[in-house]
Image 1 (cartoon, protein in one colour):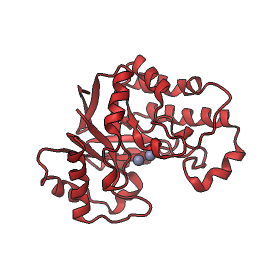
Image 2: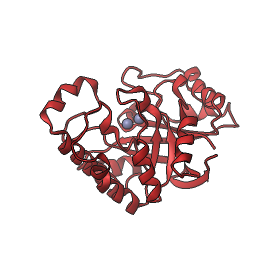
Image 3: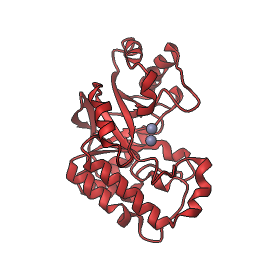
Amino acid sequence: MLVDYHVHTLGHDTFHRSDEDLALYCQTALSRGLKEIGFAEHDYYYFDFDPERILVQARRFPELNVRVGVEVDFVPGREAEIRAFLKARPFDFVIGSVHQVDGFSFDEERDIPKYAEWETTDLFRRYYSCVAQAAVSGLFDIIGHLDLIKIFNFVPLQDALELAWPALAAISAAGLCIELNTNGRYKPVRDFYPGQALLTECRRLGIPLTLGSDAHQPTDVGREVRLAAALAWRAGYRKVATFSNRKRSLVPLG
Ligand SMILES: [Zn+2]
Ligand SMILES: [Zn+2]
């Protein structure tokens, strides 16, 4: 079964979506052969975002399962605030993502000059320590774009897989799911998150997997998800994770 569990309707350039646009997300999902789509708005857009508007449009597409979740920006120290935020909302799933390390927004193009202030190996180590803390927090169902830190092709001296190990161990111990996120294919690194070696290691550890495009436009829903499913299969995955009311199910990938 093909799914896309990482879809945004709002982005930095788009603060409003028409009903037609919302319907187009569902229509694109169906046209790309998806059976299920999970909307995962950034937590900081929830102040004026009503997921009910998506569900109203989704009723026009009864053959598509629509889930509503959230992508939470994880920063160590925000745990109590995040817990309160999640407690107030009945999400189907919660993605925990690390987008900054010690205040450095490492995935923002405008912040690339700040890489000069870091030793790359230290930055990777610190990043994966934050990911491990996200896993240990017990707040999330899915860890988002596991190796996002590679986005701009800064390569650490130490083996990247070794540096990721503490995060993998924490994710595995917490019984969390990861996603195979296709968005990195359109970033300077031109690779999936996680890449093949890391994905294979996750599989070896028995970490469940879901699929996500990280679409920020209706036309990007399900983008390369079919290819991601093929890669997951090659890495040994035979099931894909789906979520409802924060309960995980595993369904056949093929
Ligand atoms: Zn993200
Ligand atoms: Zn995202």
